[in-house]
Length: 324
Image (cartoon, rainbow, N blue to C red; front, side):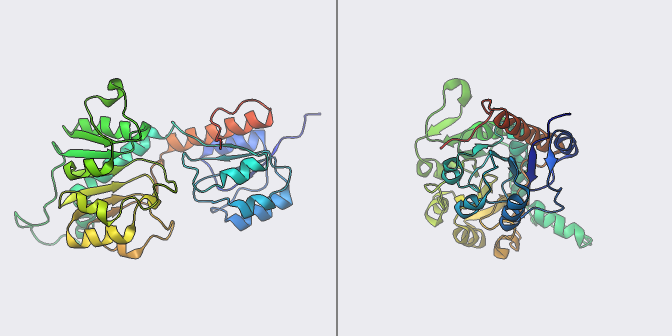
């Protein structure tokens, strides 16, 4: 008789290839039609006693949730790079292994950031609305003009894998690259980009600012009114990193008074119900946290999460562990 398959609790559906692997190799509690809530996850875990839990960034697991998980849980795998939705000390303190999915989503996140740069600069949200209304009249030569991206200066805060991939793409538009990072990159990774020790030193030189750093207590709300005021008037602002990096009240004010000409935003403080004042601004191009949302990348992420789960259950080193 074949040994029983490990029990896995899935917080949300995965791509078809990942689901096929899960259904072949694990016993699943159920395949959720929508994203589970933390309460639903804890309730299902206590009923099902899974050995593994697989979630993603929209599903937070806080200390109170961790405390209610049954002792059967040996590993939690998040299908995301970010881990700010998880209480890492609480999870590791229970002796539960934890993993994430770095690297595999770098290109798609960088692609989306470039899309946001182009869409914000060229007033894509306003053009889309005009076309949905049927267009109906010619535009004057000075009407609804965007900003040319080619040749502009792009400032990047956070020059990790994704930041470097954005810089690589921006060079194709002849953009000058500036960056601020915790440490300076080696020349082989800078590719001519100019380093600034602090964002404050860099911001006055940026036509476009793009964020690519993780959320933390230290970075919470770092893009505030003071920082936005350091940018040249009419700059473009892009955030495809984490909503918690931005003081959204300050951003709304800067977008309304023209300090920021336009913003491209994939992330927000309150997801999935962002501040309507941001979404209603005509100079905001917004997407619903979809930086990794391609079939290829979501499949790679899911497969890496399963690799981590199988390693943990076999008492092998995890390919991409999250540690304290």
